[in-house]
Length: 248
Image (cartoon, helix red, strand yellow):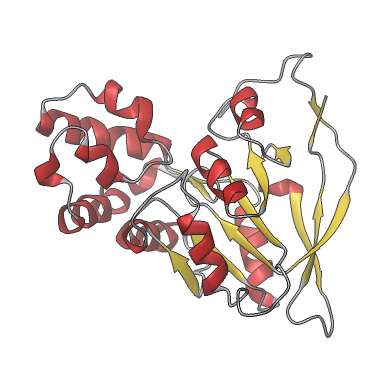
């Protein structure tokens, strides 16, 4: 997690805002769960196998698909069979090293309770995502976009455009109001490029980098995002409250 804010960065004291949206797309690592310690151990293991300093790999791996990271060091291992295998082992081997992001459990449960449109859009593979959701006993989305589903990973907008499509929000003539919740600069850039508003979580990166990526709001964690209600007769729209956003 990040260090306390300096006076020049601002304070998390923004007033409550209410927004009506059509759907929500969540990133996974750093947004729903924090598996930094587990991922660090994973890349140390893989780094030794590759003969590459794990610190070098970790400098650029967060928010990036493993297949793209591996292609930098050993193109022979940059294939989905290998990536799915090694990522599927992470929750099994390092499950005790992950924690849920504060507020994630209650927010996901509340969205499921009202049958809201939400999905997870992640740079991880399906075995990694479902493995973490099982280990953490968190709600599973009906819609999921994983690394294997797109040819270009974040910061390309492909994954979030596909997420919007899988929520069933691209058939109408009007532009849907879709909220992306992300922690990484690459993910924030991808969400913005897909035409979404983005909440940036200050869980894994500096405030400066999140701001530079163009997040519309910056909050400490998911305790600042609350489902208020499902809008009656509004084709599945929901009302969310965003509070304690960064103020400068």
